[in-house]
Image: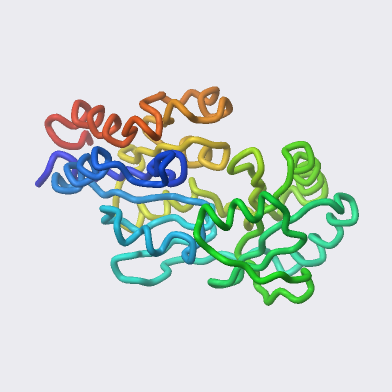
Amino acid sequence: MGKFDGVLLASDFDDTLLNSNLEVSRENRDAIRYFMERGGRFSIATGRAHRAIAGLAKTIPMNAPAVLSNGSEVYDFREDKYLLRTYLPSSALEDCLEMMKAVPEIGFEVYHNDGIYAVNPNEITEMHMRRVGAEYALSKPQEIPRPWSKVIFQQKTAVLERVEAYYKTRWPDKYEIIFSNRFLLELTEKNSNKGKMVLFIANRLQIDNAHIYCIGDNKNDIPMLEISAIPFAPSNAAEAVKAMGARVVGSSDEHCIRDIVTILDGVYHEGPRH
């Protein structure tokens, strides 16, 4: 029995666990191993699809399934299999075409299984693909195979806000639509978000919700921060995350996971509370 038995720690990936050099620091790795060696379960919850994180995931100390694609997938890297996949409704193509008439300058990526398809790619699309180390197939929406697991809209913030407003006004009960940074707006099935999937993992591992801890830096992390016993945010987090009451720790360049494990060391000095 370890002091962190029955405790789940879920971390956002980009700009949280991953630092500005696109690395997981030695200090964070050591802290994760310390946490796991004492019974804790560590997971990542990322907007990245399996294709864009599989190589890196094998290098990260992790002993719990991961949330991928901003909450549309749960994947167990130890067993190399999906535990859960959700998809946008069958009307996603028609709804997307309607939105494009209202916001014709929008560009976006569509995810189907492990394929990435780009419609009207722009500079942000190219930067995003370089960052995640993936490639896309240039496509028209009608040519992309279905079902779609998620869509990432890419443009300047003001344009994305128009897209967000369009979806929220036209189809408030069909989709989750949320910013993952200023230039990326993510669309998944309703209730497919990081918070719901962290709860799915906790239930699968028989971990009480009172012992779930999450850290994230942007709006798409808020659903999991809302179910965290203590919501954590790196100091580089968006103001919306800080404003929701997250406890601010070191930045992604200052080993924020190490800070959290240090805090949990004090919370669980005699083992998990019940």
